[in-house]
Image (cartoon, rainbow, N blue to C red):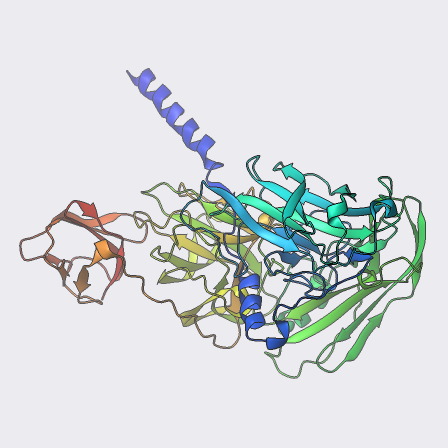
Length: 620
């Protein structure tokens, strides 16, 4: 009997151990606040309204000159997202990303997540081809990539190219089903049909996707249409910056300037790098340089000696610059400081594209600590056990004492929305089992919050602390706690996959801390220094939960008002998920809580056989 019990116990422990690493998941964003904010600004600007312009050949676009929305001088719609973060090794910096989010950054359809329909489109302005014939050998070429840094499009998804014939009809000329990540591939489309040669020719890229998801990612880059080409005219004679440059800092991406100045030698990276793509089929010798300045006063910080190197044909190579040591005096302890770091390569030929020969990275010093770069490509969440709390904590360090005033969090949008879900923010000196610590040492915990999704400053939701938290110059941890039995599982947090921050992240779903196995930086930022203002969260009313509990805060009794519905049971749990009071609802709907210690508790009731969502109470 004991042997059988031991085997069963070992098997149970094995299941728990095996499932431990299945508790971290990544998912699609289902929201793009960058697009949402830019779209609102665009509609308020009469100059940015849609216009129609007839173009002439050659047509060229590498999506370098604009970000967020396409150039209206070349394109009609503003449904795709122009960016440099959703792609992997692009031809040149800047791509057009197709997904299942509309021009406001929200899903096209929030209900029919299994339906595949037309999603984003990118249509050229009319192009006058009336003076050309099939004998002029016109070719339309472009590069495409599925997935990039997002999620791969399913086989049911697809990317399609249409052309507009003289009668106004749109004819499909190319189609690619969804697949997993691949390098950018070039497509050559001959323009040979006599119906294409008119004065209002257009071409249109469209993706088909399941409209409740943002994971059907396609990237398009380097679009060219011209005459006197052939099917072998695939060379891209261009040298261009591709991925964004590194940050000046060696670990954080952003931090307060006062924290930087307290230990600049330790915070500054040993070198500054960027990536450059030689698209020529032969090696190319280039001259390159780097400058830095402080933007408020335009103070020069550094000018690197001009360097020369030979780039290998058709490869992405890294350029390296020494990390400069220049600093500027700080006017005030809480001033925002911005260093503009600019990299450039000299124009090497008349055909080489100039705009993508320069790239800028701003190193911002503000009131927060961050490992992310400010853009989310995916979402991170914990798949929790219903009876256990889920915890996320990120390791940070301070070079001088400071005051934590709150937390900024970038939430990934969920369907259905997670507005009713609760979470707490906790700050720790140490985590049990991490760096030799025997137990969690909590400095501060504030209960309870709801997630927010509307566009805010830097697209983060701001949560301020009631009591400022004084922190010494040392390591601390800060993150979220999702209470057990509260319906707060699977709370999506923005994940920046372009930054390596996973080595600072810990999670707990079985009451023990484990290092995250997900690569990337979770987008949670401690706010330091002066007081911050919380972003307001509107109460969300759910029809089945038309009940209330009072008083709140309470001292010795709780009175439940269920609006005349039949109430069966009640349950009160603490923040660790432990049931501290439960049973059948008394006839007068009054429950004695005098024996409970002061603190925050969660309450559920059953009305007409339906379990309510959770409400928060405070016991004085």
